[in-house]
Length: 89
Image 1 (cartoon, helix red, strand yellow):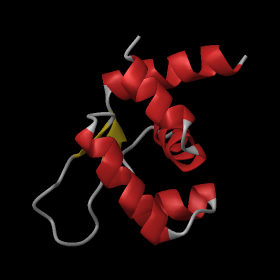
Image 2 (image 1 turned 45 degrees about the horizontal axis):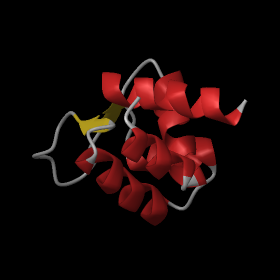
Image 3 (image 1 turned 120 degrees about the vertical axis):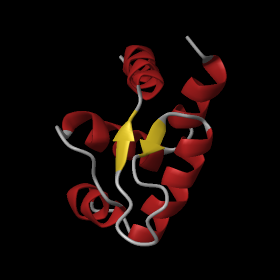
C-alpha cells in the first residue's frame, strides 16, 4: 500500500470519483467525457487529472495532442483505488 497516494485520494472525493470512472470504463476517456459521467465541472476534472498524472495514478495516452487528450487508469491507480475502498469499508 502506498500511503501517500491512498491519503491523497481519500482527501479528495473528486479524485476518487475520477479514478472510479476511469476504472469502470473499458476505453480511455477525455476530460469532457469524465465530466459528464461523474457530473463534475470540466475544469475541476482537468485539474485533478493533472494531479493524478503526477502521482502516476492515471496516464494520458496522447499527451502531445492540444485538445481531446485521453486518459486511462494505471495499474498503480487501480491498486490505490482498491486500497481506498478497503479502508472505507
